[in-house]
Image (cartoon, rainbow, N blue to C red; front, side):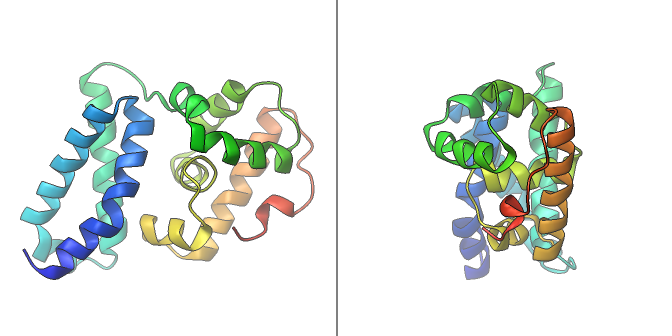
Length: 176
């Protein structure tokens, strides 16, 4: 495999693993799935490198693999329950709560996040649950940073409406 593949693997494997574990609820299953995704990426590396945005294509493959696994298992992702109990997520959740207002329940927030449109969901999970800054989130998703900020803003408005919160000031939309 070319060095570029291994650099890509090193840069994105931890992100993909965190995301898969959050969705699947179990590290062993997440490792298996992400390993399979990277084997697929390795087999199709030259074709992936011809894509306009290899990062976006790889991210779409990763998300598709997670979704297919969940469908195969006949269940939905475990993000609301898993995220509520991840230690790293607690600090990020506390920040997010302060930005949106005080919430009655972490599970209520995560359930509302799970109902967001796909791209808004990805941005919120990557930024607020997994703790990646806007620039890294944009890189992971293969989109522009301004697009991340737009999705984040739309997600905040949707969550504020769903959770009956005052949308608050611009504080949470400040770049992370």
